[in-house]
Amino acid sequence: MRLPMDDPRVQLIGELNSEFRRAGSSFFRGWDITRHYTPEEVRAAEVFQLIIRSVFEPCGEMCGTEYDESLACRQCGAGSRQATDLQLEPESIPRRQLSVTIAGEIVISSRLVQAFQAHGITGAAFLPVRDPAGQVLEDWHQLVVTSSPVDLVPPTLVGMGPFDVDAKGQYRCPRGHVLGLNLLSEPWVKKESHDGSDLVRTRQLIGARMGVLHPHPLLLISPKLFQLLRELKLGRLTAEVAHWV
Ligand SMILES: [Zn+2]
Image 1 (spheres, rainbow, N blue to C red):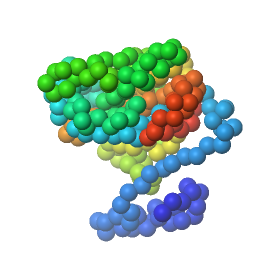
Image 2: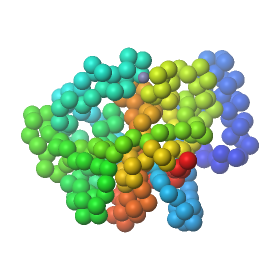
Image 3: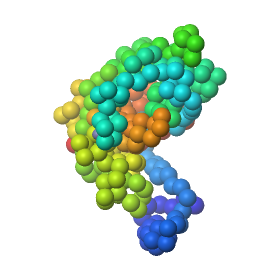
Image 4: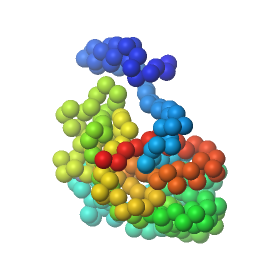
């Protein structure tokens, strides 16, 4: 069922769900918030959040990529560093220009790398991707964000789900690295922390360290990069309006 957020039934679902949860159950199994924009809203936007919906596994760690956890936060796992080139099973990489592993490693096609370079897109670097035997994959690169991180600030809403802002802070790092499990609102980012790059990531992370999963930053893109991705008509990508404050 798809409902607008201001539909009174949304409130009702929230109330029913709290009742179900008190009984140890749940009223709904899953949720997703989608946002639609008018052409005017898109034209007026100064920054966008890039959401890569082409997600695949096995991720890097399952294919031999090594991570250095020595500096990672003990509470939330933030700060673990990729210590080797990204290794992936070539046949598991979707035939998309941009995809992301379940662990948050971003894979970009060599074709899209060329487009980024031809348009002078800033804030990105492209590292080799190898197969589990160590052979470089010519068609793919790992996209890494090289610009200064920007700060994700209120009124950005982060929580467990649409009716649960994680009041107890179960998924919030007390040291401020991870804000929570899911992003519930459009993101608001501090403009003074932006170095002007077309591609930036947030300093604060969303998600959780569970098995091979890592908490991940949000990706933000400039109107210039938004236009480029739109002109290239890439599938499985969503850009939502974000806000500088
Ligand atoms: Zn932490």
